[in-house]
Image (cartoon, rainbow, N blue to C red; front, side, top):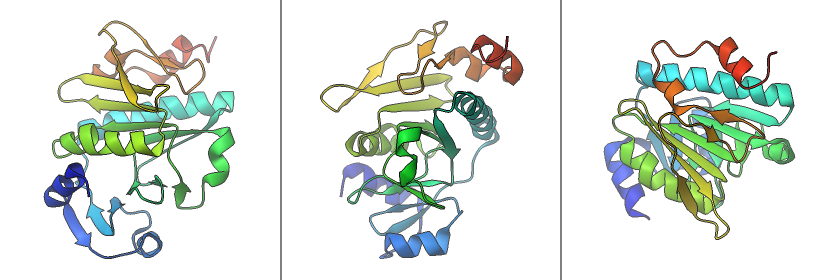
Length: 210
């Protein structure tokens, strides 16, 4: 067991131990939980700032992906069984390309997302930046975003030729070009605006609306 996992099970509420993934799926379907080494981890309630950004960004991504027929965007509590030796996680937002969607069942995806996005909560800082980063890298996630709304920071990680995550540095006024979703880009500054940008205006900037 990794150090990250040990720390996580001490800072998160463990609802049950020694449960198989199959039993977990049946008993906890649709609940705000993850499965880690036979433990059912109850995730903490979501802060309103976290929820606002999550709903907004998921909507922007889902509309873009749907219009271009590139795949599918899902979010928590939809589960990804990252691999046979890794946990089942529910990223705040996740994208999979059309070619991988055959691995999606009614209540979980057998494998990892192509793009995973986590929005940091006060208790998830280490889990998102250390534990999940390592797990997503091992599982084969192609791109990982970590959004910290309280500190107004976003980190972008892209898988390199050696199968390791490399951080892509983006200035505050620059755009970030997604490597997984074709021609999709984002301005990090959008995420810190209050209120968040109008979805129609964002879609127009992305070229979806004339």
